[in-house]
Image (cartoon, rainbow, N blue to C red):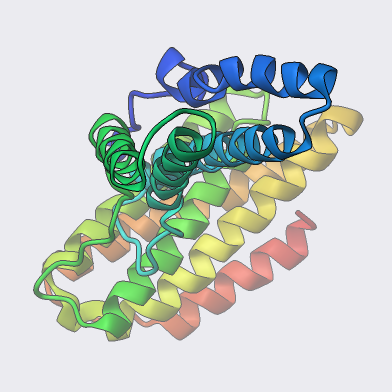
Length: 270
């Protein structure tokens, strides 16, 4: 199962830094106002520079959120529209600069501001919005979004584990978990029977992955590694069974399997 694609634009590209660079000429205006003692021009140029910097910071945060958003398929809540807010600030700062620092009329300054707003939106685009399968209701979308969040947490913990065999096993678990989410997206009637399974097994995998990533580099305990491997084998097998049974439209005896997993985690001490 392929992971969702990651957006190709990192937050340190020239495009991401452009809004930090473009208002630099205003810094010269600020310094000139300081030297000349022109307080009104200092206030105007400093205010415009501050707006541009705030817009650049917001745009960078918005692009980072967009990268994180691109890694997810199941999102219920849209991120804060930081890119739109940034573009509005760019337009406002441009209009204010044109009005107070140049010989422009109000109409001309507004036109410059609208042009800057439109240019920023065309260059950086709009903030991402969540989409949902037509077959899912809000409750079902929430279940899948929470499950995917746990998968991402497992992958984050997995990135800190040094043992190649165990990281590959965790990769298989997250791939199979995504496969279960894909089936549930197409067969939302099965969400009721699978919800507790997803919650408990993904939580169990996240718990042991975080614990192992935190303690194993210091301890190098082979016995702990073997216990961790045993739990992961149980979880991986459970996801294989769950997907097969979902495809067969059968309901698993979840209570028994979940209690087995909990008992094993407690017994192994991972």
